[in-house]
Length: 152
Image (cartoon, rainbow, N blue to C red; front, side):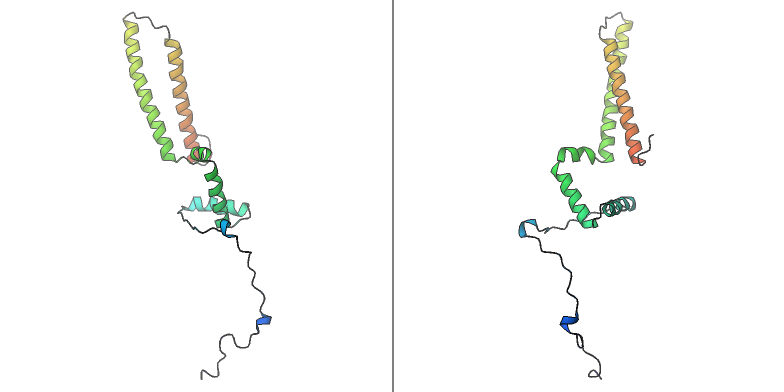
């Protein structure tokens, strides 16, 4: 019975097959030998695939290009990809510093009530006010970024 069935490859001529479409091989110095991987949640993956499609690139090519571009300018990259946790840590540190400043202002108030001279009080109070305002703006920017760019 096996003799009645056609054997694999039988009946096809090599010259009838279309030539395979294959890209040119990369020279050794340019070959990409490593294949790192990462995990993404659904919104991250959707943004990633949409960005790759927009650039008319495969996901792998887009990822390789984006990573290489980010790695070439580490100062800018570090600022742009700071995680929300790192930003929150900085905001909490700033809040602790403002708490210490609050304590110092209580000491200033006590000194003023005792008749002490405070020649730089207004400038210091304005500097603390500006720092608190900047911290509030940073928190608002973080919330806006987390919520997709809408202002808080």
